[in-house]
Length: 438
Length: 153
Image 1 (cartoon, helix red, strand yellow):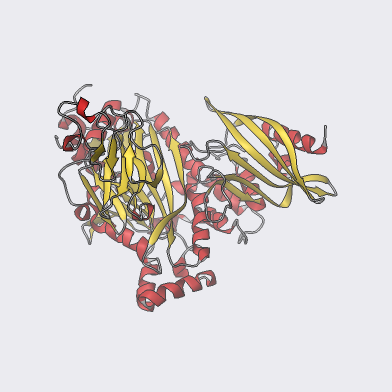
Image 2 (cartoon, rainbow over the protein chains, first blue to last red):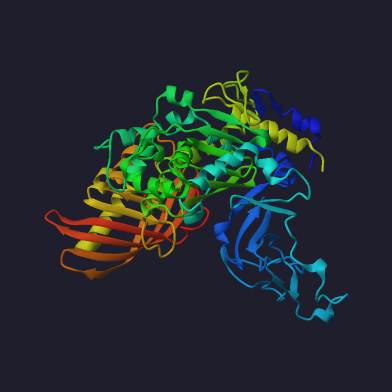
């Protein structure tokens, strides 16, 4: 592998453009795995996926297969899913409950903290394997959680999770504070969609306010042509969301768009449909609102529901919709292949209708067969395809360049909601991660 | 060939020849078209689905494909549906429940995928003949990592 110096990396990103190698070069990708995904706090999941001791789920951190388990002492552990003996994964299930992880190959057995518990033929190893601390499952060096969201970092050192999240903490607050019980839980199944394109493409798209009118033109048109503009019945949420994607340009311009340290960003909301936005006081939300007010009071409930955000991006692993109870975990599989896992959250204590809305919303926004999402995926693949040409090396990110403004809480704000500030900000963080030597 | 066989073969033929308006015409006004996300999924309202369309959403899905900038649908995926193992498992006089096996090849833009699914049709006897009141397709790989789905099963 050719060595990429810090200067080589820095030359790939200019203030308003980026070299196509950032999306297409396998050597750059290897460096990302090591220095970006190998260092940053990555979102692994939510504590509701492991409520009791022994509960676990499996995932990946970049290339590392990882088990997230609730240990007997109540703490959440992240363990590398690799037997210390011959390398076999010790846990094959997506999730479950267990007292121990048993390697299928030679029966080495580990506790939910990764410690080696049982070794058949232990005396045959030199020194004997029983009780050896060096033969446990490797631990992911740092694990922490914010409001129930479990993050981990493959690096021994680095900023704390709170420092890393910075002002983006308020987006997690927004999601959790909406629950009348103060708790949210993962529910309703997980979409796992892949596309043949670089992982950055999806994170660049989620706060791109110009794309809906073009990428989603066909679903907007088909929904508008539908017989009943204001639908009832099951189709309602999906049709309304498709119609909202056709919001006028002035509305996209006026949504706020904020960029934060470490590559994060979030966008103000563009929804005006009272059936989709709880703050707009549609009668269907009254029972929910009452339930929330009962716990926190009318003033605090109004303040919580008044937060209007679309996507919040915690770079480089997560994009979520606090108001709409949707969260995506982004995992790079190869320079030109990405996996996005989309989760829904139940607001515990809210009327069941709220969660039914969430599922209908998930189907139209994150569903693998959605008339909306499929067009996003197609465009990522076409971007990846176009970037393979050597006749033109630069990707232009000039929308709003030079007009971004400093704002409170260590953020910068795009002059308009259609700025490409979030992409420039992601790439600035990308350069910082990749140019820092191990 | 029985009415049931004829309808399922006709449905597959219409899908494979992109005659989607005629395909829609096979469904009742209150029809649902469902591709569950999970194996043995009990219902579509509190668990997500790869596709869950009532009649209105199904019409929107079909209409979308006619838009010149339906990026994932122009060109349309080409398919061959192989429908076998047809069984009538229930008949209450008004409606029949029919199960079948589907193996489908999908091709679009240099990529070919093979799908396998267990299908359940609820067919209603109407004055115009048998119509589809519900179609459920349980893909064997519904819970796996999947690229976008713009075809119809």
